[in-house]
Image (cartoon, rainbow, N blue to C red; front, side, top):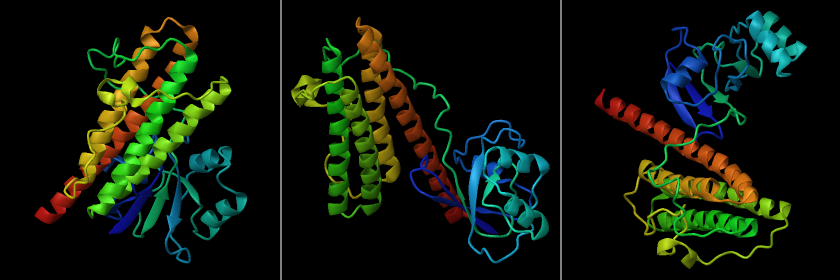
Length: 302
């Protein structure tokens, strides 16, 4: 048996899966079987989309690495392999640092597989609620300055909300979910900085609206989770976060599709694309968490 640990910014946490060596399964096949989002296209070693970094935990051991000519050529084109690494692989059976997941077979060794993911691939927008095309939560947007200030407020409230949830979960002893909320809070801080950067780009002076500008005094991305809950699971927390991201997506979508101001529409569409990516990432995390729970249940039953 081999332990293969997958790690990526696309995942909420590292995931270790068990693989049976000798079955000629590739890293990509193992990833697909466990809902791990390694990007791929051709699956035949010709496009390079499934590039990964393989970390061998015992670097002094020789692994009998076999590189196909097309894998070597793609790695060369990507600038991810050196002449010395090719020689080490061919002469000394030593593995190169980077591989194509569709060409790298699982062997009887523990490894880590690190990948960044395809950040340029367009993301299909999430399904919209019936009212999304006209919904703005009662918020009236008249100018680009006003829109960007609302956007900053949305992202700021989301960051503060997740950070407060992390503190409350730590206080009630739910450290696993607290760590997840802290991670979501850090991502929201990045989104906040992106919104502020747009303000600087368009020379917008920050004049954030009060929470009372929204129905129920709540900005779209806030979840209904406030009190610390020691019984809350990571899966439950992720699903609540997904609901907030969906509302954020619909807020920006509604503005982009109802405003008569071309400048507002242009910038709002940028937020729509970004929020769609956030929704899809959370959906991937939920799928991974559900898969991990199924594997745990099967291990107990077996």
